[in-house]
Length: 74
Length: 525
Image: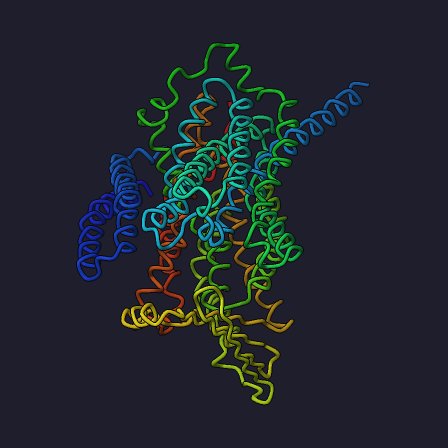
């Protein structure tokens, strides 16, 4: 179980890192296609609020998992 | 004799815990009521304070709806959480109640945009932020306070009463709005009657403050304070120390994020789906949600109590997994039940009525089409076309393609489909009770007393406020993305479910892998 937890730690970290360019590229694509106020508000909320929380928490959580910090909780 | 003394002491303990639960729950329920009436009346508030032709006011409207819901709540959690760990639980969540009640009451008194111009949206925006701040501080305090009064082995049961308050608060908000709207009539309600639910809050808060003033401080906090063991810097201890930060992260990713999306989908998205995708009439759609909420609420206590016996983890995880698997089929049935394309129209009962009236500088043409279907469903479509009397203005609007009628579609379901919808929403409320019922006890038990208020409040409000609070915004966006062209129906009305399904799935995997089921008996001290 400990090995799976550590292995998934890599998955969470990669997900956290991967989400940043993915969201920014999608936002740029959609705003370029339709630069409406609605689009700007939506993507600002996602980029300023949601993305940093998801990225920071997944990366940090992944690193902790990889280091075996959660093994003791078994 | 000794047996009698023990029995008396146990009875007193239960009675005291009941008083604590009642006093805490009433206050928290009122705070949720205050928070939800703004969201439920968002459309009317927008018309009164945030006129569409003023872009700044429109921007404030969007921010007021969302910012207070998710950005401010975690800040409230940090601010009041810190206070609660420094000066005590009782006074902190007394303050949050007063702030919430005061700002709600004030919203009910703010003159509209027509009277004081831009000050109106600015004041309402500021008051909405105060509401979010207060809500951020309330829940953690109430859950901590109740848990610290509860006997070990019964925390899931006792804290589940706090868990019922969010749903009952929504129920109360919907109920009060429906009653006031039905009593005054739609026009009067839209004009000034919407203020009554806000003003009514002052009465409810007054009673609750009176009850809370009589409560004593949490025994664990008092003991810790006497021993000089309270934290001097709860924020640093909560989020800078690795041992605690890792628990904050596991609480957020493995529990509250998934719980937040299941909660918002089962209650808010269900209502929005009924009204916008299924076009179910306002009163009927609110009745469906209200009845399902009322029938589902006791399950918070059932699952809270069950978590004392079998642990918190598996109940919460089962709730998330079943929700992930069941959402699509449930919403498909909801959609099909109200879909007029699959129903047989009773053509001889169809009626079309057109009225024309001059109002001010405009001619208003209203066309009402009524249809009846073989299964008893009725449909009413109201098209309202406003054309300026002034020819130049008319030509200008026509050139901008703005001479289009406003269309309102209302489907009224027959009795059997009405009950079927209640059943389908009720199932979703049961998922909510599975993930939400045990979560207060779970959060309380993974953090130490000295920083509990701060540590548990933040993941709770990020999970609920950010992940959950964004369900309406992101889900609506996902559905809109499938719309082939403006005016046409979306190709996939269920596309909005992708967001809660994805978040709940990740949360389920993290929770199953990393959360321990043994925490249920951890000593709270």
